[in-house]
Length: 68
Image (tube, rainbow, N blue to C red; front, side, top):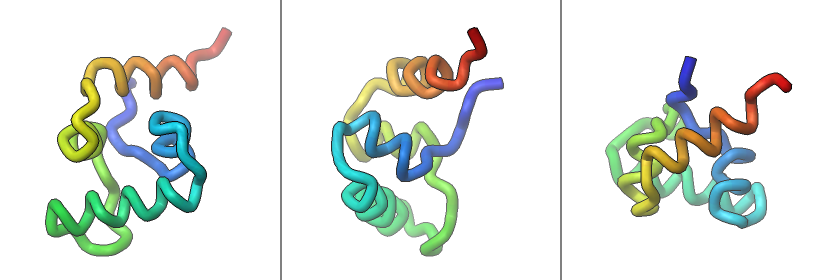
């Protein structure tokens, strides 16, 4: 099943930033989309805000969870 939510650790890995910076990024995304402070951020919202390809982000997220 494909992942639909982005967590700070994953946002940090995708953007090449620190965990604390990724937390701030997700807070800004929530504010941009009018979400409450602890609401989940979807892959689509993350990609719209960061202008990253949704396909590439989904592949990167699901690749990190694949079982060898």
